[in-house]
Image (cartoon, rainbow over all chains, first blue to last red; front, side, top):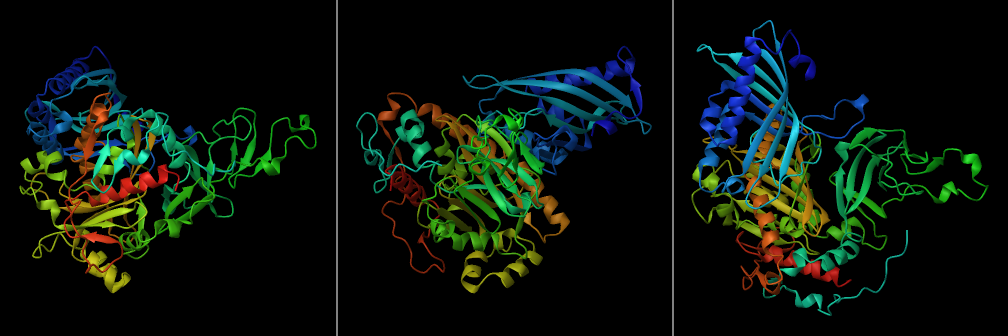
Length: 177
Length: 442
């Protein structure tokens, strides 16, 4: 996965394009942390794919621990929209009352491919607290494909979320990554 | 392995009789049994040292040397197909200092080498060498005695591999009793059976393990717990909708249910399988089993104590089409209030690639830790655990009384005690009855 997301021309920090990508990542994190889910959906392309594979502990010679096709998320725009509409009901108990999350995004590497899509690799740390429970934390890597729409805006066309944990130490995955 | 103690105390340190905590006939069960550390300690010996536990499916280890690290009850195990092709379950612990010898979740191995002092085992468990072996005198190492500890018994049904640490436990077929009939029905319906796709989802929840087992034989919660999906039109807006089914006590704590749809619903039948798989099912199942399978839309079952299959169907998006999926579940207790959850996705081996893809997609969107349904179940179990722990709360009972006066039916084609209403706590009471018998050392 890493190879394809890093293909093309490296876009370095300090360039306008890198700043535009960074700004999108920050605005996305802000929308998710402040329950502005429709704004978040607006940052996704119509054909967006959103996948979190299951990680296993394996020898490095066997890869990075992504065995076969098991996933935690395997979503598209329609199913992500369903997730958002669910959160808006009064009965999505896992998030009613809602968790407090904070998306920390760093280590952003940007590449521009020949077809114009941008490959963006970043690290995430997401903290979550809900009710009076202690912290739950998710860390990992996101591999995003960004595409510019006809309106000139960059949007997420694909996201692969690579969790660091093989055993997710959290009640559930009712937060968005 | 040391012998099992033959006499077990039936009273806790405070002198209370376990039977006073679990009143199966009245459906009143003490909150204490869920979170009390003393009871958890007894469970380790009397349940997790003695029962049969699911460890994996044969399709997860197709080749010699294939292995997966899996708990067997509460002990770390290795499920391996050895050099001779035999399936073995080993304790993942070197005989020297107890170090873990398998340190991945899965690999293909010829040998298991302990990192600590370099003891090396074959995948059959046999100890073949130790580092600097010449420093042992001729009778000191005793390789033939100190192979990896093997599960006392390993057996399978429909490719589902179970193991127990108890040499005195009844053989698997006898242990399963009437449940074997239903596992053959659900897993043996299509040519070649079902296969595991990928690797299990694993996550840890702050819940007492029995809130999980309780929930897997509970239809009553669906309308309320999963009401967000009623709100979105993905479940019927009818509080009775999951009640049109049959609950079965298959004996020895094994329980299950089949839920049937309305007679005019062609989709909510035959587990929602596509036509080509229904044809196989009609060919593979004898008439009595087919009579159960044909009108059933879903089935969920428990092999006592911690293995569950959930053969469900659901749409995964608003206004979507329902797809069926098979999900295996297991609880691995970590402490009285923390449990590791295991979830496998399975699909019929001979299904079309498109059905396999859609079935898995529908599973992962609706079940597992990110699933639209499952997310809310875990929320319940955590808050049940927290609210049942206090010194005042644990003086009181929980209410499992629905159906205590209900009579079983006699015109069901399969074995077991069967009730014609899938809202009811008959199966939970059967599970807790077995819990009590096991905890009393029976």
